[in-house]
Image (tube, rainbow, N blue to C red; front, side, top):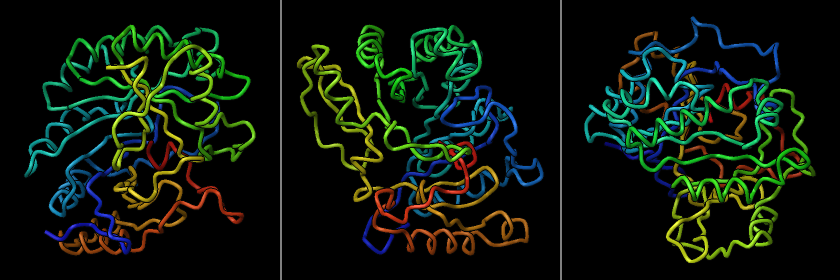
Length: 329
């Protein structure tokens, strides 16, 4: 085994795998209501192709695999994918990020297949706002999915929330109180420049500092928890604990220095940074008959070229051509 290590000594053990770019919602900060160009089906990795690339990564030190999209639960073979990854040498930890809509029917089978935990996206507790944000009237279904995840023992159930100025930024305290009452782990995430419309505006982003201040102003006593290590979220004990809230300041409090993540897109492109402009094509050599070692060497070279930081605060920063739905959340 040769660890996937970059030139700064960061060892990469966490792989984010997008299994589809399709989604059942149309969140305003992620997708247009219509007109998005989907990845052609012929370019999407088959189950065998996806699992082979994941296995090569696992053979080179990956210990955690997070399945993303798009909406990963739209992929018909998602349960089989989870089971196959868990059966790989070392039994990699498998997690999944989802909008939750299909969890009522899939949470139990996924747990039985070895899925360890889920992150569920939820930006508002208001039905009208949910409709405006996602362009679908599915708040009740999302809440049912959260309940199903809890019932299936997918612990911890984490909630990902993006606050947007003038849209839902008045709900920080409401979301945290609800999450605490439900025994859920809430993570606030700064809005990132990964929309296909390239309409992201730094002035409209609710920053990590603002989120923390709004929670404090609402009466929550926030105390820094343990060192987060390579985790993206800064954790704070709420009112003395044991419950916590996380704040992911991807833009204003970047965690690049400890990043151990790589990404595999649903069309077989390997990326060493969410915000990077470059990616390495694994699908073409895979389909041309490349050996496992040849594929591993492509992964190693890509990781070795990773930049020290994502550079979103650089004057010359250019938003990635691919939106979040195509890269994988």
